[in-house]
Image 1 (cartoon, helix red, strand yellow):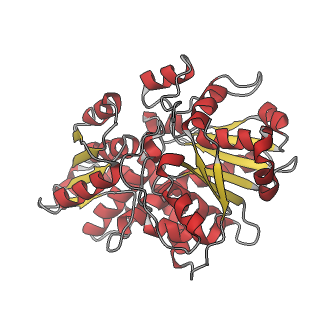
Image 2 (cartoon, one colour):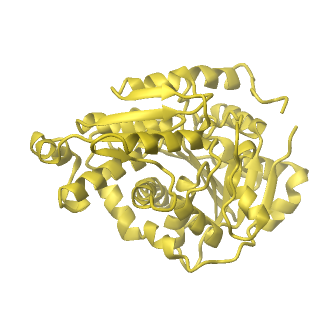
Length: 405
């Protein structure tokens, strides 16, 4: 089997100007907005006590995003907050003045008018954007990369969005979305990646993701855990990773957690940059075959990359078998631990932690990260069974898809 690869972060530090994107006050605004959406509730934090004992760490807690607004993934937090911030700005308001009820009112809709929100997605982000646009009486157009499943497309179409699966990779779909938005009146790109000249909306999306991190910190404290010592967070373009890293760096500036960023090894653009070690951005091009569809992104979010290279301890590239094994383990936990239905992109961080703690091939990494009996590990299962048929094939039938790679 292909090994897990890792590299210690030795990149030169910058002025850290983008850490302020995840300032605690900004995350509080996002959390306050999300709390006004009907159906909002904190998603569960699964305390895997028996697994922690098995691995030899103090605690393993998994934030289970399969319960988020019935959408089975965390992504709606970013898309909904970004659309709300955009409408607030266009109507001359602060986001603190706009709760969800006001946003969906006929009066505000008449004042704001009609916009079309464009995005690219493997499924979860696009579904979140479409869901928010639908409820706000707006339009959504979604481009999906080659390899996206019909099931994920159907979820987006069910939100009355226009959506297509294209014969190009995710990064090309991002460019298609931007080009299409430029051609229509009131076309707005709501993309969870940033590039030069397009930083504001991706920053709002990252702040929206901060709601999840803030919830998790609260829930840890309720379990008697004052702070996580270690966080493993998955990355595609890095928006989620930058959001989580930025939140906890701001929350615990004097004693920050050790953060590991985990990518699919076929799309590991952040790992590639960390290996180069010069602080520049590096892309992965072409097809990026992986079961971790949500992580199959080859070009870093520039805002997030700046946060990550200043604060992340270790960058990790994981093959598919790591995620597939983790999906099965979380679905069939040690007796007494809660079950977590975790999808392909959601489970990989647990899989990496497990291998580090039990596989002697990763003793060096275990020592580097100072993982042991006093470690309090926080993980985020970012999606549930967003494609139920593929989930069953992996968890029930033992299929890894990329087992020969």
